[in-house]
Image: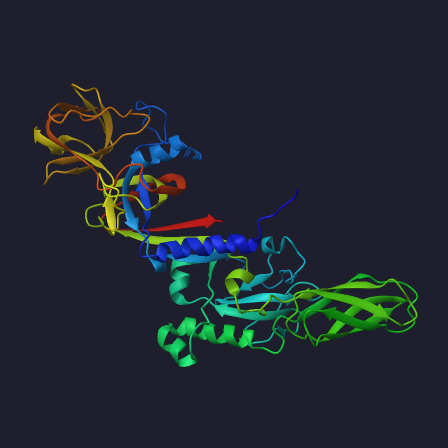
Amino acid sequence: MTAIVTSNFRVLNAENFKEDVADSNTSVYVGIGKSDVWSLTTSDTSDTTPFTPNDHIDDLGEAYQNMIGLQLLGTSDVSHVVPRYTWTSGSSYYAWDSDDESIFDKAFYIITSEFKVYKCIKVGGGASTVQPTQTLTNPTAESDGYTWKYMYTVSVADAEKFLTISYMPVKTVSLDYVSDSAAEAALSEADYAQYLNQKASRDSSTAAGIERIEVTAGGTGYTGAPTVTITGDGTGATATATVSNGSVTAVNVTSKGTDYTISDITFSGGGGSDAAARAVIAPSRGHGVDPTKELGAFFIGLNTQLSGTGNGDLTVGNDFRQVTIVRNPYNYGTTTVSTATTLKALKSATVGSGTITNLQVDELIVGQTSGAQAYIVEIDSGAGKVYYHQNSKTGYTAFNSTEDIQGQTSSTTVTLSALGNPEVQPGSGDIIFLENRDPINRTTTQIEDIKVIIEF
C-alpha cells in the first residue's frame, strides 16, 4: 500500500498553527535560553559549535531548564512564507504545471524589485529578460516570451517582519465580506488591494481554465493539422495543433474555458496517428485566488522583537544560545495556561549576607552544604537576588535556602536567605520547536529581532 501527505495538508497544518497563535484560548511563546557555553563539562568554558538538538524527552526537558524567559506571540508575529526567488535578468524560471509533483521545489514564481509577486504561467524560449510590472487580472505575456500572473504585492509591514534573503511572506486575504466597502473598511490598504485582485481572479472568465497543452508524443504521418478535442468537467476550452515534418509539434490554446479539474486531449484527422498531449490546468478557483495554497506555503515565519528587559523577565547583560517555541505553558505551580506578555523562567536565590555585587554573571556557583551547582544568569543587586539555571553539566541538585554559595570564578561567598521559583512551570506545555545557535548578546540599548522558519 502506498500513500502521500499532500501539499494541501501541509499548507493546512501551517494555517492551523497560524490560527493557534491567533486563538485567544491558546498561548504560544518564543523562549530564549542557555547562557552557558556549548561544552560538555563545567570546567570547559570555551564555546564550541552549537550542539545538534534531538527530538526526545531529555533534550526538550533540558531546554526548559536552560530557559531564561518567554515572550508571547501575537497574530502579527506569524505569517505563511515560501522560499524566495528574486527576479533576475538572464535567469530561467519554471512554468506552473498541474502535473509536476515537485513544482513547489522549483522557481515557478518570483518577487520583483517592486516587491510584486508573479507566478510563471508559460516560459519563453530561454532566460527571462523583462521584469513584469503589470497588475492585470489575467496572465500576461512579456516580450521575452514569459507569461506571468500577478499574485500580490508584499506590504511594507510584511516585508519588514518576514522578508529575508531566503524566504518571503505570502498571504491569502479572505473574500468572505458582504461587500467591497465592508472589505475596504476592515482591511489595510495593501490587503484591500490584494482582496480586489483575488476577487477579480476568481471571477475571471478563464478561472480554472486550461492554461496550455503539452505535446507528449508527436505521432507520425500527419499531412495537415489534426482536430484537437478537449473533454473534461469544465467548459469552453478549445485549441489548435501545429504540424511539422509529419508530427504534431505544438498545441495552442485558443480558449482556456473554465472550471476544469480534469481533461483529456485527443486528436483526429490530419492523416496521421499516435499524437498525444496533456493539459496544464489552473487551480480549482483560478490563478491568484489563493496565493498561500498556490505557492505551496507550508512554511511559517515567526518574527518577534526582544526589547529591553521585557518587564524584567528577559535578562539583559548576558547572552542566549537556544530559541524555543512553547505552546500553552502553565503558570508556576498551577495548571493554568499562561497569558502574560512575558514570563521569567529562571529560579532565584535571595542573598541574606555577603557582597552580591562581587559575584559575576555566567560564573558557576556551588552550594557549600548541598553541593548544588548552577550558572548565574542575572544579578539583581537592588533586590538582592541571583537568578540562575541548571542543566546536565551542573546536575539538578537543589540548593538549601540558607546555605553559603561560592562563585567559582570570583571566589566570592555569600549566604542565602531564601529561594524563589520561576513564573513558568518547567516542563509544562509543549516545546514544538528547538534551535541551538551561536551566542546572541542582549543589552538594554539594542533590539533582538528573532526570525524562525518552520516547515510543516
